[in-house]
Amino acid sequence: MNEIHLLLLFHLLGASIWVGGHIVLSVIILPQVWKEKAIEKLFHFESRYEWIGMPALAVMLITGVRMAYLYNVKIATWFTFKTPIETVISLKLLCLFSLVLFALSAQFYVLPRLKTDRKKLPLMTFHIVAVTCISILMLILGSFVRYGGIAL
Image 1 (cartoon, rainbow, N blue to C red):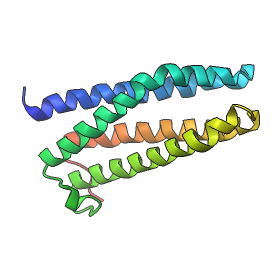
Image 2: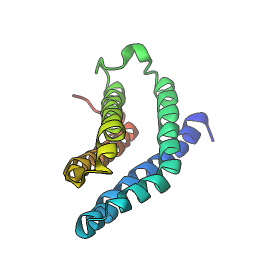
Image 3: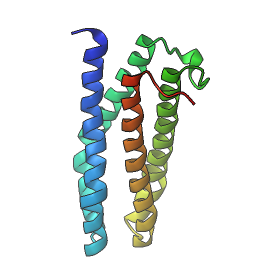
Image 4: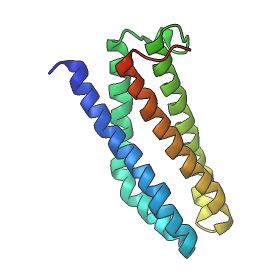
């Protein structure tokens, strides 16, 4: 087994945990929260998922950057969109940056207010659905590496 294959396995394991957790949150937990008006279910899920979700995201970041280098996409060529493989990596990085912005917004603005104000639930719902969709998009983009990337 070569390095890129091993990195890919860890990357896919991280993606399974990250994307799977957000799908469960979006299609199972969130509808229960809305139906039962039980915001505490959201906090309960977050507290139980965070210990595995955040390390999974870190594994994907580390393995993704290393695989980019192995595909000869160095930091200097990120966001130039010159080659199909570089385009995939740049699009995934843009998605990652948007995930970070949503995470910061949720952690420092939405979640603290949601604890005392149920009217923030629609905003939290938007954050959850957006992060889930972006995460699925990243998964789809990653599948294009198998075909040499995306030509824009």
